[in-house]
Image (cartoon, rainbow, N blue to C red; front, side, top):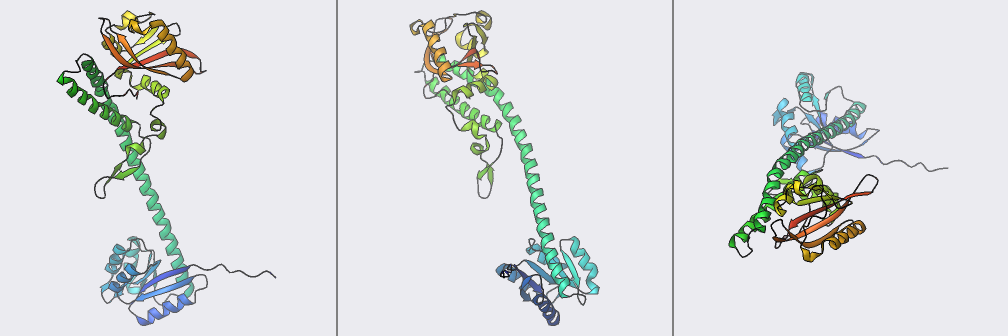
Length: 372
């Protein structure tokens, strides 16, 4: 014969606040005789003592008499509810207080029972239902709060993206102009250091704007006292931040978002220039009309070996995804400028190479080339 294993019953901890000894004794007996649940009773005869007990003992539900020596009427419930909003409350009341009990239900009480009409089954059922209703209401409140927070943050993220876009426009103009000033300024000139510092701060701002524009989720970090702010390093998409050396992907992103911040030249498979951006015009001194649809335009210093250098770039770009080098270019007026250059193939949807792109920036002391 198989043994009868009884599932242990969960003990429900009840706080009874009742000043009438006879009523308190009846409630205690009803809870003791309950069949479906196990109850542990705490009893006080004043509201003040009940509030103190709540600070010391873990309670699941409160049975509250509205008429107590130190409180009466709706104020009894209001004072208790203000201190224990996370607890379900069942009111014990006489016929004279039924209107007040109904009012208390509207303000957050879970149920009320009329003294003289309570039995063990009714009391047990009322306690069980009160606890379950309260749990469901708390879950609904939490879910609603999360929805509101999500909607609020969604609006803030949209605003952040729009703001970042507006900030990026002047930066896209300022940074290339600063680069042009630095290229044309002697490094021994005291103004060079000052302008370079301005450029460093602009680059930091550009990086911050870039992070804001890429926010896809949010995590917070401590700020001051209890205030928290969005952690931009964790809020941006991990795939965008995990590998700052992933040059090919960053090159493609540059073509889409930051063409005006670097010299960008695209050639077809025959070496004919098909794209020559504004910054390239300012850096090299040629207009787009002078070079577009032409090939073998001399940009590199003669000592670099033009044709061999380009062939090497294309071979390495095809093999490795990109080719990175420090080069010396020569402008239209014959000035030589040292640059950092990234050279990469462009592919169509079938992964066939259709063109090559070169992205360059004048080489400045202490500022490594990172395409964003």
